[in-house]
Image (cartoon, rainbow, N blue to C red; front, side, top):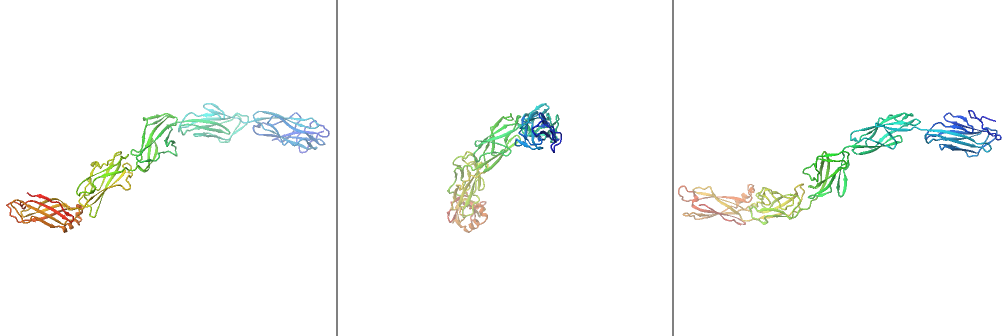
Length: 602
């Protein structure tokens, strides 16, 4: 006896299950039709072709079409691992008349192939029902080919570009072909790595039917002359990329303090450790060609001719430097000034900054100034010299400055023989004697004619850089022109006539004072005079002279003009001097009387 359960459409074919009043019908539904299809024992549920990695499902139903309750004791699946049951109830299960038990049959293919299996339904008093299962997995299969030259590419494999000059571009064309049994979608194409890019890519995503293809280009534009790698990715497939940029790439490094420092865009300077002035620091500088072509270097040097930096140990130029070859040179730094110094190392058109700092030089050795000391005679020209106690490693430039102090106006004649009260000198490197220009190692100094103290104080500095070396309290040379009696330098007769003449007395007074002058005559044979010595008070005249502005240019010097007239009977044509054999003079002030200077008249 057969029946049509409510809610089911389609034809139901009864299985031969005439156990008492129960009767079971097995059927299935496959999407997308949703039709109910009865199946007998030994029948087949044919799943549609299914994309690998996805799941198709069918609903398997067991319906009790009898007039009484019936029992299902088991539902089991066997065969391929691609099939599975889902939603199976706890068994055994008793179904009332008209009641249905449903389970889901899942088909998940893992590869492009045919799959089979079977489901067995068991009952306590009837024969089991066996339902066969079949299905096939489908999938797009992308294969790859490099065009020109034609090379089959495998995911994970290498795509090698020809060696390419820096600044140029090499391109390779890649074809993607769907060799599978289902349409497939290309959703992403990209390239990463220095210099690698893709071009000519169609709008994505792009669906490729079976046998269809698309083509795009991989570009390699190296920016550095070196071997580089990258990755091409198409969907989840990846390929290794490799290429070599052709060109020259010089890298620079130096060793300082036992550490190698490689120059880079962010640290592109050669930096020396601080060095004391007069000392020299040197470091080894390495030039290496890390590129892929030989490098030609024609010129190497320091940009500042008179700067503190220098190079030594240069190779023969011009130089051809092969790839991976290098050479060394020595850079020196001899600071001449305190603080930072900057320079430039030039390798053809490449400029590399050089930075160094100079620290305090060693102290100046002790020195002596040779020359007059204590009381020194006025109107003399003693010699001055300066000598270090030991040589200094660099040339020293300096000066001697003269200061004059006292209660009287300073004599402007107190100066160096070269003129002025300051004289420059040079002490050559590694020597001890100061050289005063063309005067050599000794220079004269004029002591003048005015009492006072004269002090010579030196200053010292490095000739290069002018770094001060002068001690905090530099030893100086001091001497004194002491107050003394006047000094008469000369006596002469002027304004000579038949009745007289003028006696001129020149000399100096270090005190810039005079009180009297004495003139002594000696007559010629045949002449006589009642008084042969005359003394004159000149104190007021001396005050007027020495307090005048004009006198300050002459220091303590003076000239006295004393007219004399005589009553004497002389032969025709003779002057008054014929009556005298000589004339002498002395001058006096509060300190004493001068020397006597005599002038012979005849």
